[in-house]
Image 1 (tube, helix red, strand yellow):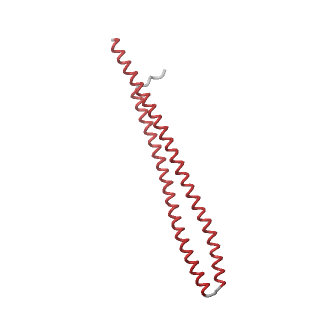
Image 2 (cartoon, rainbow, N blue to C red):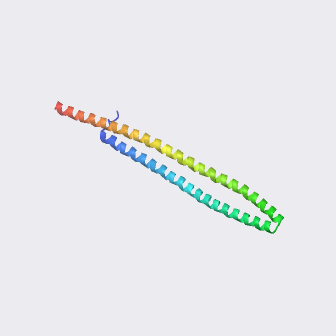
Amino acid sequence: MSRPECYLSLELEQRMNLQVRIMTIQDYMRYGGVIDKSDDDRRVKSFGFDKHTEDMLIYFTRLLDKAIELENWNLVKKTKDEISDFKKKYTDKKKSLHELELHYEELDDKLREWLMEYLATSLERTQNESSKIDMQMIRENLNKKKRKKEK
């Protein structure tokens, strides 16, 4: 036969459950920090990439200006080929950075949704546990009063 629970043991259980829930939230918030840091690193790379792209456009423009001025059509063709190569690399890199941005956004959204659901569930569980404790306290108080009357 199991020992009947008293409200003190129920309160202890509730406090322990609450601590576990808070620790779970802390862990997932740390995970959110990792996602945020990774996205920040991606953003820095993206800004650096954008600066490199600007520099390359300036380089190509100057090179073409010089080639046209000198009427060096071989240099114009060579520069055109370099621009085509750069455009391919640029497109691939930009696509990769964009996919990474979307990936981090999706992870962040999913984490936020999970945390909101977890918080709602935790609140409901805590309220149910509180109600159970309150009911047990009422029962125990009624039993004490009943025993006093019987004496």
